[in-house]
Length: 622
Image (cartoon, rainbow, N blue to C red; front, side, top):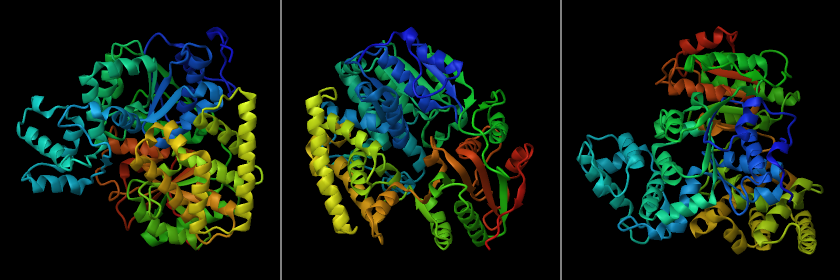
């Protein structure tokens, strides 16, 4: 591919970019701190910067770009956007991962180099302890006077080896030693949390500087998305790898959306990064997601968090009639669910939006709202989908199943089998198979042979799917058939996170279980595929799971004192979470308040009431 001169480079796939974005894209001599509020187009900005680096040869082969996100769907979205902007050749040198996946990949490759007694077993298990597990550990070891939440944070911030730590309270050295010992007590199967993995990576890198040098040589450019939620351990890793190196880091995010301090995020990540990495600052001020009326309300919330917040320039056009925001007040939870379900069904039936373009957001515990709201919607012919739920028989959430590489490969083939025309999937599977099978995308003979093989497989798939109705057995056989065609060994060799059996089996079984669940009661494969992808279903999720996503309409359940029992006005994590929920919407936001669940939040009512958001009786359940 011909190299473009930097001064001749132009953005691809968009009409224009704001001047600050272009300035940040062209700045490659300094580290960057890019402040980008909700809807500012962080994914597009990073994709354009990746294209600039790759297509101009500033990042020349074999060098690669490392992009780190906090959610798997955000990492996938960025990877897909870069492929759209750069094409398959250049995007093959763009590694888009979550922080957890990046750290875990290093442990999978270099875990054997970690000095004893911290050397993990090759078949380690990922542990997800809950608050009861932390408290139970302290109770069993005679530390009832200590807090489980404090222990969770201490593990995340504990540098290894523990014996060298100089702690103000020496008791914690004993606590942490016992914790690591318990998780390593089975010599055959180590249990590791992701914060423990992060600390192990820091330890092995400090023990063997050659690994640091190798990673620096591989990644001269690093993107850090949603940087405001970076934890102390993750920041330690970044410093270990890239501080005072020749790498250029671009940190992107927004302090107003910092909602992970409770989970160990740094309270001042941008300030610390700017000082440590001597970063230049840029601010993106456009809002490509929401129309002016919503941006006006968002800005009122933003100013309550940061008084100097600049008002974004709204780029989206309003295309709905009536209210775009209101607080729907209800007396009890039953009438709340019935009324909201009735409004949703009417809006969908009128063609205002499709079910998947509306989101139900809750602060936490979406399964409780699934039990209440799901039946009310179902009685009106609308399906609710809790994306945080594991499919029956799987050990992975629906939201994560959809982003797995094995899912992307297998479902492209299954969609081609179900639909008569699916050109996007044809191009996707050609690109992926070329990569997995090690074929040259520019070699005509290789590509012709690939297309012939793919065509024969699709003929077989379509014949089989047309002749057989969906069933559990057929779903399992279908997944196995397409994976045999792709080549499981080749797929696992191409996807670093699948090198360990446990990780690959977890992803593959999640795919199979979700496909089986999607086939329940269905008679045709088109409907099964649509069910799998959530087409025709209203997604339900927590605020934290909604980060980075956008929807036509958002309905937020639970604007009350019991749901937000720790709510503090002004600059608080609760208000930041509220800001995140509010800014997911492109056209409308409705918030429900129920006296049966708690008192109204007067501060929030007054804040958004000043910009025209009224508390009104909620839609009836008629």
